[in-house]
Image (tube, rainbow, N blue to C red; front, side):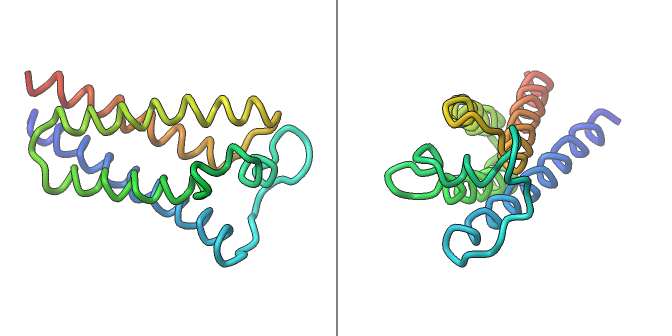
Amino acid sequence: MNKIKLKSKKGAMVILAILGLLISIYLTTYHFLGVPLACSTSGLINCNNVINSPYGYIFGIPVAVYGIAFFIAELIVLYFIKDIFAKVFLNGIGVIGIVYFLYSEYMVGNICEYCTAVHLITITLFILSVYLYKKKL
């Protein structure tokens, strides 16, 4: 029974990583292919302002590209690496990245709903990886 619970947590992590990957791909297509964003463009929630701000790029690369790399790494770790600490470590890096992204939204004065979804996914992945780590101890 306990193994089933652990497998369902891992399955949830896979689903979350795929959702994060899809959001990151969508935002990347906006940057490189001009796919229109389906989001609010006025008021506090304005992903356009956040994504196109100077904080929306790191070393000239849209942060969504880093999101793609993160979620692909997440899927690789989930499928191919047995060491649960690697999962905790990777998701810890993701949470550290979120601190930067929250700071950037604060500096811009807007919130990006897609970014917020990725933040929640990443935090949930971290919590689940810590839970799995504790269960393995």
